[in-house]
Image (tube, each protein chain N blue to C red):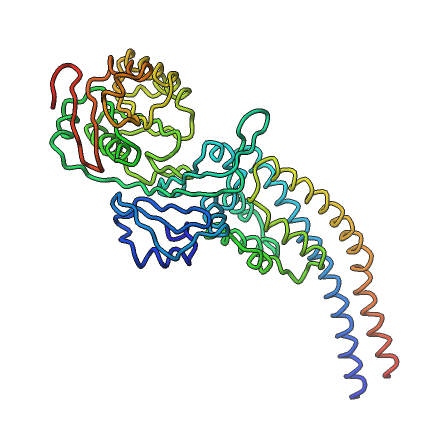
Length: 282
Length: 166
């Protein structure tokens, strides 16, 4: 983290922030620096982010190898050491009818992943009676954190857990090294489009559990339902603030027929409720 | 006797300067050839696995020694730890074996390296390779003519000084 932010900004940040609680830093061109400490946003007045600051961070994050990140830039993010995910906005460059990369970067959102041990009876119960689980919440409320905790807990119970980590955010894999411990029975697929990975990895890795972050679109739902039909359990996260909205969605409501538990969360380690779709509230 | 000793020393100095001159041309050629090898390995690394610059650099560095390798190592260390500025890159490739034109080519290339998308990076690589090809041909020619001439010239000059002083 100290390498990623220009020294002038980092020094000021270091004075004000408890780095153990830092979850996000937002750099916007010619705007003050914002950071989130334990989920709460604060800003540092008088500390304006310049174009050079953005380019510096981008250069460090790409290890001075922007050419290796074209596809990631087109997706709007890059992953840095330790699973730090950097969201990027800028001007799109269209080539052959598709977004090929971004130029004139205007904002960076640096998100720092944390492995948090969650002490919660509902979560313990979910792991003990493990079945297909869907975790829902708004962005930034701790879906990925809970997912990581569940992956490690299941892996430690010797479930062969396959993590489909398209963006490298769950496992923090950078240059082939896992920077977040996801347990000893976990296999991680990084950088492979999830749609491809579902079919190929279920056949080749024989997982007991598949874990995936941020389900998006009809094709992925088809793949997930196929995996469940094959007898593989799935834990997945979905952006949604309440279960009723999932039920109303013509696309995502299909998940509810095959998932057993829906966990809605309202903060890191803070479970709102666990719904057992087979009839009981946990 | 003193005259003889002085003329001997001057002859030695003259011959030494001639050899040093040849050495400069040899080292310049080696430097540019190593740079050319690096460009080939860079092209492989970028095109095949889209490897990152520090990885490509470290792999290349493990295969040789010399002035270019030392300069490249300095640059790779910078690329690993921060986003190098033009000044830092200039410092890395300020080799005494290079001409002013060579230095500009290297400094520009390494400062721009890794700051473009894939297609632009490859086209810049093509441009630098074609520039380097011409420079290398010229450097080899200079090595063969001027570089080989200098030690002989130094020796002849030294002997001439000896004869004059004697």
